[in-house]
Length: 404
Image (cartoon, rainbow, N blue to C red):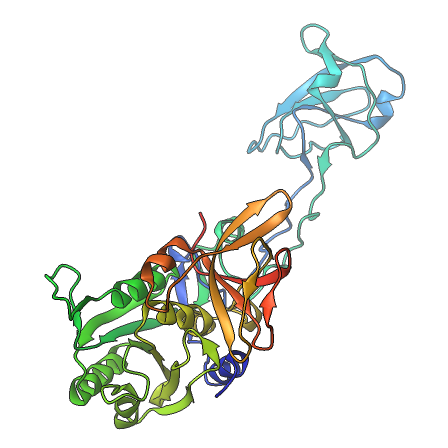
């Protein structure tokens, strides 16, 4: 079996970014930029005041206090440009262009009124004080947001500041979800003791939507080779990736591997030295479409979802490889025992305290313990060669949920 890192390397080797497309800036949140945003002019485009106060020549402030006549006023957004000559000043407000002749701004707190049309300065400032210099943030043509950046609110703000109403970004993948198992019934159905309500389908749908990935289709099929093959073929026709849960092992009713072969896909990973999630399967179909087979037990499905599937979909959406699998380095509050041999994923909660992030293991009975999964924020990764992790050790934690 492959190690989890070897499995991820194989997935990366067969995963390519989707083509770039033009996205409205209003819709671009969370997309990955394909073409950098460049400054269309100097930022700021002129010398501007950083304070409310008075624009003046520093040479007129050599002796304090000094009273000067006010020759005009400039507000932010105003084209007014009163000329400041020797022995004069102009009232100015934050963000306003520095008027001709002035080389300094004195904030209003360092002045006092001296009657109509005059102001007294009680504190000197050196030349250049309280001025935002033209081009100090960026020069025209300079790169403001690099290609490969995930677009957040500030990146969209700087794009708007350059006049961009649309951005060239990588297309996000569309995913088809197939839950397999003759025991599965819809969540709203009455269930017998031999049946299970489908939880993996809704879990996958929610996880993809939280990641900004659209779900092209979602269905349930029984453990039947023809049914699984037909659903897989239909999913590949409408999506960039298909994610199946259940039926991926080597039992008599595990038909996913045979269905993958039947649709002409090529398996690259089947079986990973990890617990839970050992039967995980990865294959590629024609046209670079991806197929993921997740174990049916919900914690096995959740673990492989966050270890392999979501990272691969991020890569398809243009994310840099190094950012596809986020980790938190955290302090372990309770020791974890581990029989060596497989890399283990232990459910845990995560909290940020004054000393940094801390994780606490969550007790779990088995990989079918969905109730324990609902109490966890993710999983501590226990290396295959470790006999355990001591209390207080720094550990790798894979976050599963989205923090506000």
